[in-house]
Image 1 (cartoon, helix red, strand yellow):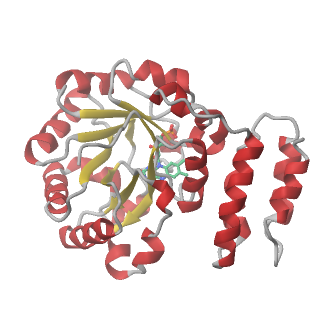
Image 2: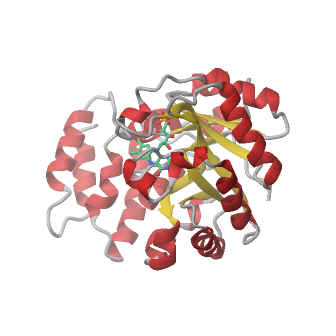
Length: 324
Ligand SMILES: Cc1cc2nc3c(=O)[nH]c(=O)nc-3n(C[C@H](O)[C@H](O)[C@H](O)COP(=O)(O)O)c2cc1C
């Protein structure tokens, strides 16, 4: 407990940060903290637990993100996550999608801090792992700093949760799609910095709109860590290839894009033997050659051929030839 280095983390992203993407990310960075996609507590209570929770040992340090607000379901889910030895269990209080709102999951819970307290306490009482929260700075018109301050105050005082990952925008609960909710509400980094000033004993992690390591370094002057989502997926090499040396004072050899992919191909081969479709894994390579010579041809070749029946990792090796 408490030993996780949160200087830099990759955000939970549905359909994007699956276990295959996380292995790819781990090839480039050994130190970044990785998050799973959100898994709902009902899915772990009534569904196929192994399908949702299995991961590769190389992924540590790895946090699982839960969605839910039914205390019994969260307890069941937390116990499963603990058995699977995730390093951290995070509660999603930031997702604005109307579908999850109906299940009382995500950002809508910011309106009910006492329920969030019950959820986090239920989780913490059923695990020896650190329990954390990811939330917004508010919902709808509740966009004053005092609102998020009061939310953090209540949660920090009534639970063992001491790590707050703050997406520096409000969530608009009606009328905006999840995608628009990541673009339209303005970023208010000053709110997150102020939280760190007002609660110096808490770990405050900033998220939202950060695209490169220079920005990360700026934020680290004011908060304990930074989390990147979209850029870590869309331009993974740019964000991750040298991050351990730059942010974590490591002295690692830097892998080229090709070397990263050759390493990932080894992983793909072992997974393909167990029945994972090549396309499920190869789709995460689309951003590696972003803005690079041959990148377009690499992507085109992969997308046109990776879905073929009986495809092997040869399809990736062939695509790589366009980049030499
Ligand atoms: C495709 C996609 C899926 C996402 N899924 C989740 C999720 O499951 N849980 C969550 O807390 N946030 C989710 N998010 C939000 C991100 O974690 C992050 O908070 C947001 O993208 C802002 O960070 P960024 O500007 O660095 O992308 C998702 C974002 C994207 C783009």
